[in-house]
Amino acid sequence: MATQTQVRIIDATRMTCPGALDGVIYMALFDALKEFFARSNCWLYETVVSIVPSTNDYVLEVCGSSVVVNRLMQVMLPRFPPPIPPQYLPMSPPQFLALLPNNELDGTSESINPAYSVPISAVLLNAGTSCPIMRIKTNPQQPQYWIATVALNIGDPVNQDGLPNVPDWILSKYYDYLCSGVKSRLMLQPGKGYSSQQGAAFHGRKFNEGVGLARTETRAMFTYSGQRWMFPQGWNYRQPRIA
Image 1 (cartoon, rainbow, N blue to C red):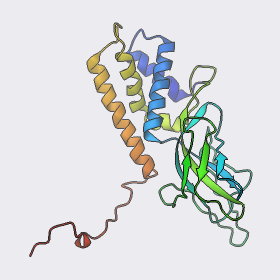
Image 2 (image 1 turned 90 degrees about the vertical axis):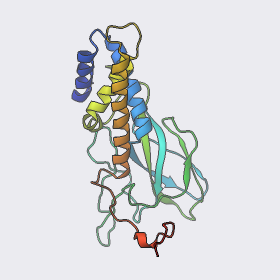
Image 3 (image 1 turned 30 degrees about the vertical axis):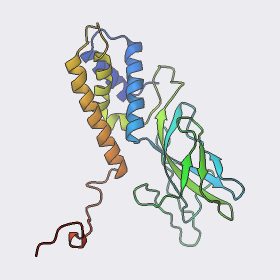
Image 4 (image 1 turned 180 degrees about the horizontal axis):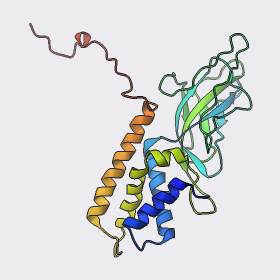
């Protein structure tokens, strides 16, 4: 079922590109979303991986068959084992693991934040598939539970309305930029009543601006200004000294 934000994007596209067929708009929306997620890595998903000493290769399971894993963002070993089966925050589709008390001694847990954790060496062997294989560098001597953070992208099949199932909060947050991505693709089509090279260039630039904004905000996990602290420049020996 189409979400309210998806319907709004389609209606805004119809207003700017009158006469565009619904199937053409849906295809342009699919292509715009696929490029947006591939370049920005803003659709994050956390999954618990059971690590055993006998192998270095593990299949990552994500939240459905209509999504693919675009990149492996990080792998971390939490201080305390996460609850099994894993529990997720109330988001649709699910993305982030819930923070639950899982240490019987002090009842504390730890936040899982890609901006503040140190990744463990691992690579993704077949990115772009729904269940890719992750290969770790070294095996632990005993079974452990690791947490892998991946960047997702849309894939087939789509829902009954012909639209991909993506987090609606991302569509709402970057609404204007995604609208421009759809409009730019439609305006590039030759011989249409809505064809416009100037309009396609304008909306293409705005779409690229949204990709950069989403990538930057995701790197800082949506914190204002990120890290303001800088190393004292008096210790920077690359700068010329004034006698």
